[in-house]
Length: 308
Image (cartoon, rainbow, N blue to C red):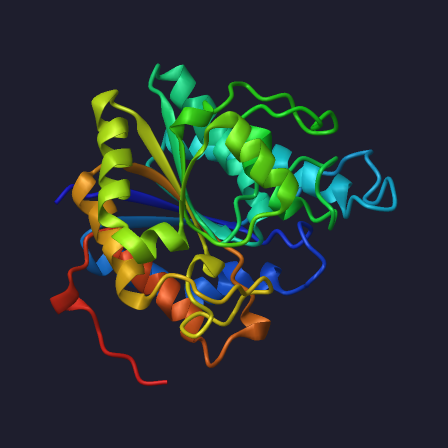
């Protein structure tokens, strides 16, 4: 097993939506034993603590729709630089925070990939496609826009200019089951690879994930994984403000993580949308830690049985 030098970067982003509580996510993951789990698998850990958003002159609510734009732009600036720098130091894990953090993390890791002349790929594990722009989102919640931003859709004039874009053919979404009409039209138009829950129900997730990983390996790509709590079924992961029934089961989620570990392709990771205020005795935070451990090499026989 390759020994990784893991960089933990807390990103208590709570500006991407109106339901508050994700700012507590990074510390909840630490409390649930993330560092200890990673070290127990033979990897090293440097915890950089929690970042803060850069101040901007952009108003938080510039119109009647867009929510906390200024703060989210500040977080994007902070995380873009932090992500690029962390890729040079080891294996970064970004502890969220809501999914608006990926506006910066994906842009930053992609900038690093461009500098080392390797293609950047993104695996989006989520109930939602997050392919909106500030102009198309009905809710105004910017946690629904990261993939629109990093893939180069128009409408992000207030955000930092992207050093490079992630080609749409390099994005794979798995677990999707809640897509707005505007997003659906954009996904179809741009031929984004989407593995929704119906296709998983009908044929499983092993083959589509294998096919995507084969594409990454074929061109020596870097793979960023963004794991949203709502990828999981709310019966096993209640601590999220955007619950959608019918998500990934415990075993499906661990299978994804084990396959990612076996591939040896993952170069960075987001853990997002954990809202401890909505959790049940820490069970969601503990599950996110266990899934991270599976990604980093823990096998089923090593997995502890938890009592809640």
